[in-house]
Length: 292
Picture 1 (cartoon, one colour):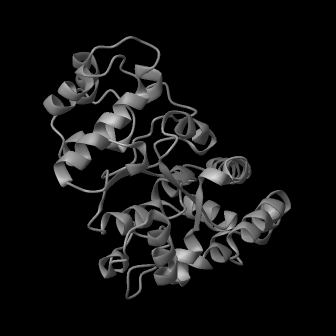
Picture 2 (cartoon, rainbow, N blue to C red):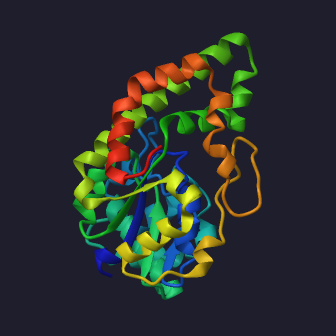
């Protein structure tokens, strides 16, 4: 399979990756993996890259890690949902001279295409955003979509999700420390994300979550043109994950959530975010031609 038939979605979490994955998957020529592969995460020691690339494992050993749910990431933990049998993956890996994380991804995407008879197969978030160079190195001809969103909206979405809210309920100290550690972490990640985009912009296709929400048809049409495929109406009929803001409306996107961060974040929060992200936000706005 040619690397040009691989399709990757990268960027920060909370930027609409599930929505974009579902839009792409709705096209007759594209089949996306059911969830993210988490090739690398900075604070995990059981990601695919760390388990596979550091040792010379056999095909049986690798598929055993998957069967026993030893690899971090929704895709690997729920591998059965992929529709790929472990036996077919084992046979595919046996043909590889050396089994590394890149050959694992390649084998999975090849099997997805073989099963679906699609032109493209892809996955969202195979790497943490700072590792985009990994894709450029191992899959140089792949189509890579870079997702971004207003930094305050990203942070508010994370702070407002159910898991974060539960952790904050333990005490006032937890509320304060979790709130501001989350805010600062995502500020840093946003800056890294934008810097990464501009270092690799020649090889990335930029999509903003806000574009998908406010002008979905135009954004999807442009995306199809970039991929060299015809637009299909079914791509507009899908949705993403439920909003952490619990905002629902008719249609497939949560338009009201675009401004909901102003209710989640206080004025001090928004000041801190603007202070450290305004220049990066302006650069993304200029690159996209979209005013956030």
